[in-house]
Every structure is written in C-alpha cells, then in structure tokens.
Length: 245
Image 1 (cartoon, rainbow, N blue to C red):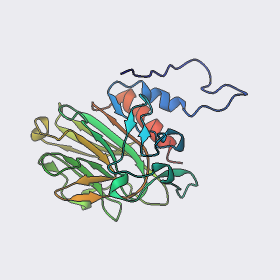
Image 2: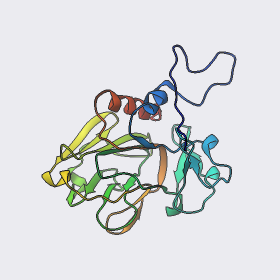
Image 3: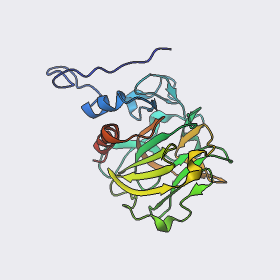
Image 4: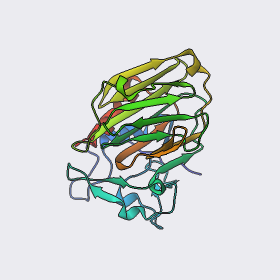
C-alpha cells in the first residue's frame, strides 16, 4: 500500500491561470509531520465514490463513519458562512479503528459548540468531552479531570469555531489541552506513563462508561502517534486556525 507524499516547492502552492489547488501551505507543513496516521478530508471533494465515507487527505485510504450514511449530504454552513461536517447522529461519527495508543498521541479538531473524541467502547480507554456550557473535561485510563468546572479556557460555542488539541505525552506522564493555540490545562500523573488505552479513536461520539454522542460542526479532525511539540505543534495549530474563520 503506497503513501502519497506532498512536496513543498518554492513559491505559491497554486499556479496563476490554473484552478486553485485544494491544499494550503499550512496543510503541506502538517502532511510532513512524522506520525500522522489519520486525516479524513472533511470536504465535499473528499467524499468517496459510494458517498459513504471520506478519503484520508494524505494516503487516500478510506475514512469511514460508524454507520452507513450519505456523507455527501452532511455539510452545512456554520456561522462563518463556510461549510463544516454537520454530525447529527452516532452513525455519522468518524472512527479510526486500530489507532495506536501504546505510546504518546495527539488528536485535534476544529469544532463548534460540541466536541467528543476518544474510545468507542466501554472499558480502559480515553475520552474527551464538552458540556452543554462549552467546558471541557477528559480522561485516560484512571486519570482524569473529573469536573467540567475546572476548565478555564475559551468556551466552545456556535458563534465561532474553536481549534482544540489534546496531547497525551506518555513519557512525561502528562495530558495537555490547548485551545486556539494556547495551553489551557495540563494534568500530570505517574499512572499516565503506564496507562492501558484502547486502540480506538472516534470523533463525534465516545464512551465514558456509556456511549455519548457529541453532535455538531466539525472540521480538520486529525490524529498523530506522538506528542507534538515545538515547530510541529505550531504547524498543526497554524493549519487548524485556518479553519477558525
């Protein structure tokens, strides 16, 4: 199975006089980050021929939802006037089976008032949820922020989309939450260095003891098999913030 590679050439991405390419300089920078394993193309042109899923932005591999749905009809304009994947049922949630969790990882998305990321089945895993008030809490293994009220970052809402990055640094024993390019929380625990985490990743629904859907507008869902930092983290957030119009 081949993997596409995006080469960055000097000058503009698009060529004058020809149709504009559906890729930005920020996306090219992200495509070259090692450990990128999941990047569904949440655009109408990335819907597969069967209209039942998307293709990966980097590899063209299928990125399927939990159920059988016509994703080509699942776009709606957000408050900024631009389309987003309008996730309205569990079946529309995006799933990455076999998402590697034995080491560190980073997952991110640009969302409206709701976000749900994490394992799809009950048991030892991870989850990341927003309340109806737009506050965030999260858990890996037995380590968690148990209350939404500890969250002090920007509230998620449907007036403007928000870029959210969740970093699990297994080596450091830390979970890090970043919102719109700013670190808003870090939770450290020795248990995080050895936590057992299911090899599952779902956007739009997760299982925090019971299955919970988090429906709404999603853009730029993405997953990496390492804890991003430095220039790589900056590149990811630059790409995400392009979607916060």
